Image (cartoon, rainbow, N blue to C red):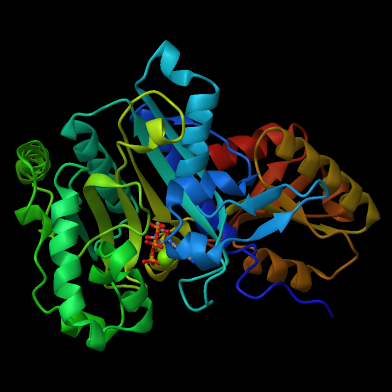
Length: 420
Ligand code: ATP
Ligand code: MG
């Protein structure tokens, strides 16, 4: 039997209801905050990701699913959404109508990482971006949005981490200081960090290898080396978080895996997931739009790890399963045909109804109704059809009432609506 690809997964019925519930909660929130959905392709030219994410990042160095198409063009399955959204913003000159645009998108991403709990090769992200706003208010808005989504999903074991990555003005001096420090302890660093300490030293700060963490017990913090503009920006963000009473931690080791970030970086961390503790990550990338050939417009965004969020929400007792309003237990061919007619009519009215398609005993049909969590069961056999009355059983209260078959749909619809 052919099995699915390692690191990929199916989201089965039972779990998909949870995913729909999260997705609906997120979409409702985005719509109230006036974010518009953007749908981007699943593949792009490799150069787009290489250029925007950065040649020395883990993603571009070793995690991309890249293939050559028949014309020898290099194409890559998207490892994240921002690059494509920026490309789209530029390509369709969306900035010409109004540089300020807010987007959200939900969909699969692909990274060839080592599969483990909370880490897949096809995983899903819920993504939001604001273009054209240089003000720190945009940063605050996105953090509030994330925080509100967690609240609505009853995810309580979360912490907002924030940091500033500075800008091309203040970061180089800091990078240099950090590289000097790293050169001094390079014999203690992992091979990966030794390699990236010259090219991308900030990445060493959040290396998960304990030896690297120990090597720099108290690394110099970029927030202590910010230029005045970056410092003001950061203070405004944290000032607003204080004012809104959103608890946060300034995490000096927080950097993003992607090169294009500037100033605010943030993450939502949780204790509920074990090793993969980041549920969402985001930050400002003021230089990316122009770097990809667009106008000089600032931008900021975040990506939520949908799989990880589903894992947490799935552990809670959130009730997202839609109950089945009605099951029709039919006995005999005539009753079954009637039942089928009624099921179709109720379905068309938007009332969920199920039945048994084969000849089965009443006991077996009641068992099925129970398993499907039916709120009511309509029991109808040839005798009931003869008498023009069937039995409607309320499965919660275990009470029964007799309902006339004439105008059955209206009567049942009324009974169900009264109950809900
Ligand atoms: P991590 O440090 O966990 O590798 P990252 O910095 O690579 O995260 P981002 O690129 O910022 O992650 O993506 C945002 C979110 O997407 C992460 O916080 C995480 O929840 C989720 N995510 C990233 N990679 C994976 C993956 N391979 N499988 C499942 N979720 C993922
Ligand atoms: Mg990663």
